[in-house]
Amino acid sequence: MTAVFSHGRLRLYLLRLLDDGPKHGYELIRLLEERFLGLYAPSAGTIYPRLQRLEADGLVTHTAAGGRKVYEITEAGRAELRQRAAEVTTLESDITASVEDLSALAGEIQTEVRGSVRDLKRELREATRQARWDLPAPAPTPRPAAPGESPLLADFDKRLAEFTVEVGSLVRAGRLSDVQLRTAIRVLDGALDGLRRLLR
Image 1 (tube, rainbow, N blue to C red):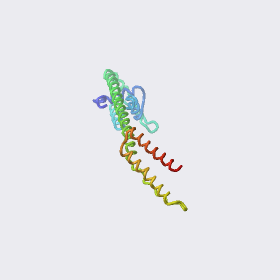
Image 2: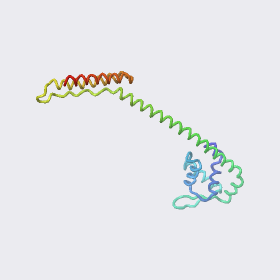
Image 3: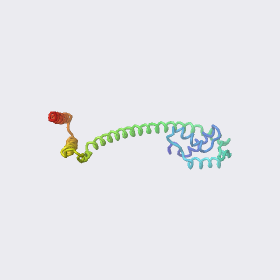
Image 4: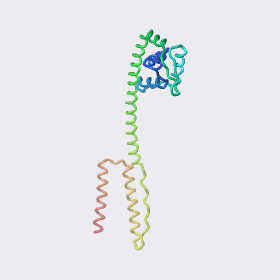
């Protein structure tokens, strides 16, 4: 941006914008921002001193309207624009090229950010999956025997809970393959079938 508006070129472009009609400072800032597709906007501290200098040089005047200074180009300002018409044309071309460069850069940054976000999401998913495997299984809560219930039933519930936690921990810690997991499931199914036969 500095290269485009170096050596008094912003001053010249402000005259060019005011040639289209009177404007207040923030309107000029907004027009410049639109011209640069929102990728650049000069600050008030950049625009207002230049407008004051243009006024001191007799190239613009201002009137107060609604608490704002509205700037208008003078005949001397128009004469300078005519005299520097070739510079204005070159400046317009440079601005167009700068906007294209900025747009391309913004596109590259956007693509890079999208890629980074995609990578981050993938890493977060993997970390979440890993955390699930690494989480210790909750410890079983012992259940006291109910009145009239055999104390062995409470002991059975405790052992069953411990068994579940232990098997879950072993499987998760072992990072078993699908084949090994299928085998472990068959072992559990076999134990369940054995218990069913026992209770018949």
